[in-house]
Image 1 (cartoon, one colour):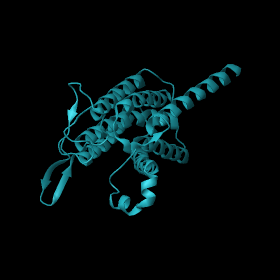
Image 2 (cartoon, helix red, strand yellow):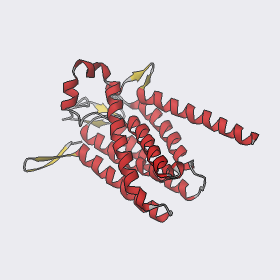
Image 3 (cartoon, rainbow, N blue to C red):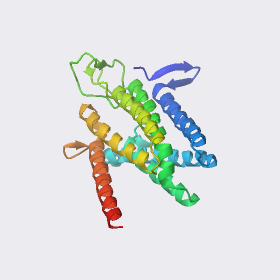
Image 4 (tube, helix red, strand yellow):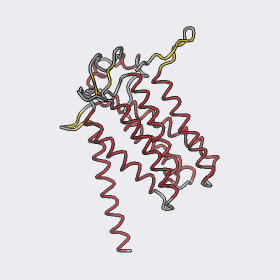
Length: 253
């Protein structure tokens, strides 16, 4: 639980930034490996990765500013000076998928097939990112008396010297397990879009539940739900309605 891992002269290596960097590398390497194994056109892996990466970071930042819009309007200079702080994962997922769709449309690629390729890697990247959250102390949990709680002592984000739910590590374990489930599923299904939809459904369910343990108010709320819970619920409703309509159209056909 130390964000400043080491100092190399004037350079400080931060745990959060290091984990994000390792996560990005892991996403690309697993995409490249699985693409070559599964017969994808590998010349599209790097461009698609870069498009989704740019869209993902932009979406995560925009979603953060949306949740903090009242404070951003009051002091936009503060957020510009601290631009590297504050990201919302769901914003990154949504805009990352949209930019991936745009790339596939421009290049004439089967988007659902490529989504099946890159979304499991996204889950793996998220696992690294959550370890970074743990080192930084952000995305922390509520207070708890349970023995597996964690105590921060020098965090700039989490309450210090208080036992909290280890929501960052719970999320990291969930994301890593989701990655394994998705790549296993990919080996046993040939229907395009199955892995991608499974990612959205399983991630939404897991995120919705973990949010009950979160204690950081910065993530915003929509009514009784956190912002991420509301998005999770909306995603599940959208997928369910889409599946029902798709099934009904197939039966008529």
